[in-house]
Image 1 (tube, rainbow, N blue to C red):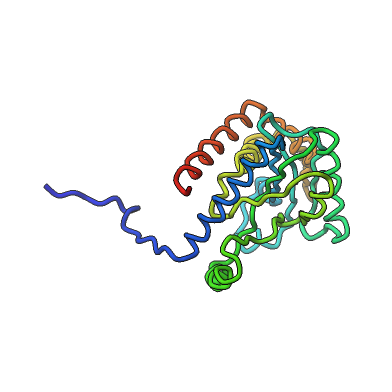
Image 2 (cartoon, one colour):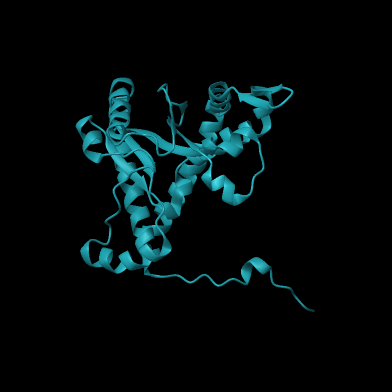
Length: 252
């Protein structure tokens, strides 16, 4: 009797020394996070996502044209109970002054100190090109096998010194284990809301010589963020905790 191999299993995954280093970083992150939680730190997940103009308008354009269209970056934070009551930020990509980057993170840290006390602020590690990863692997093993890049987002620079000065700790989820950061589920919920409801937040005017479309951008984003309810947040964080327990048991 002939058996057919699943095409997905035909690909050979080449593992390198980077995989072992990545597991060590993941274990270090998890142990540090659990230690801080045991000490009474509140876990806050801080993240961002990009929204392209084509996503907002629904226009289908060639990939080359999409790359030249403006991008908006949304920055927000949440915990196991839902979005934190902090005013989220929307920036036009590459339009944020450098001196304002740290001010936003400073404002977040001050808000967390007043509202929650000491917190463990968790961000995602920025993705590195594969070539840079392979080249830096040997250097990292020689210098410090558990060293990790300074945690920062694509738009907002998260300074560990600012977090420490406010009584918080800044942690970074290794990129290979990005699903340990529940913000992905929140951003997915927002984008699906935009896709399914953008027509309800747009006004179209047809003139003799031209036509234009007006989109209630702020209302669209606000309602989309509200759709990520506290119950959805609890489910997302619960899923992350199951993965955390699994890796703590497997990598220890």
